[in-house]
Image (cartoon, rainbow, N blue to C red; front, side, top):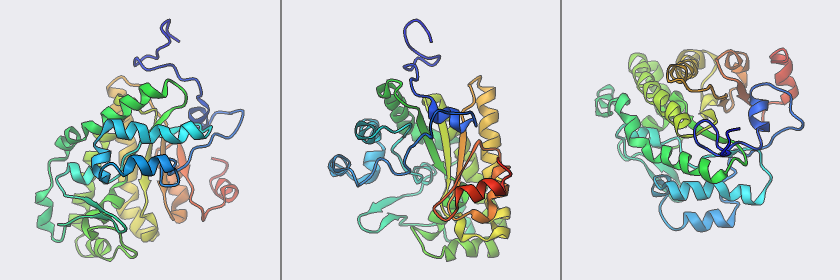
Length: 298
């Protein structure tokens, strides 16, 4: 610890590193706990804060994101905070309009329908400049956490973001997005590369801003069988981890543990365990003991 109680980036020194030690595979005195939607509607103070403005306006307000991130920690002895944001800020940064419709969820008024629609997307290298509000929220939250627990940053994985951009919102089948994989494989890979190129500097930017761990959400993994997942999701999941780690090293920044969570991706646990992440998240359909046996105690 430095004499002023600040860490190397000028943030308050971390007092509870149990979550980070567990993420690095180290022994801990107890099992650290955080909740996937710990800033959520179950909290009356969350509902009150959210009622003040629409969803994406909230996401673009560092002060509001900080407040929503901290609320659950005032009630519960959690071992980590996860920044309040949304995976769909990345398609927004690429130039797509996204709204949050009450009772329905996210909506893209002009989804991607044809291959030529990819030309509408902003240069992924420039997209990160549209996301400074996320970085500001992370820095503000890291300061106000005062070292109590580590702060997790996150993003959606390329395939999951692709589904929203093509379906125009949520879908029970992902029929439109899967049609792209079968009928437009070249364009599908092009879009997945664009998303990967946007995600890498975005995740690195979160670490620069103060995130102490990163989680990649492949929320729609279950809509792909093993073959499609191996072809259109896994390569980009791997690429994100490899490139983020390389960029952090090139920038002289300390590595942070990375978590991959592929919902309903039980068929790919072995592949995910070798994808370059320190932690593989499990959903409710997978027994942790069985997953550990499958992965040989990984």
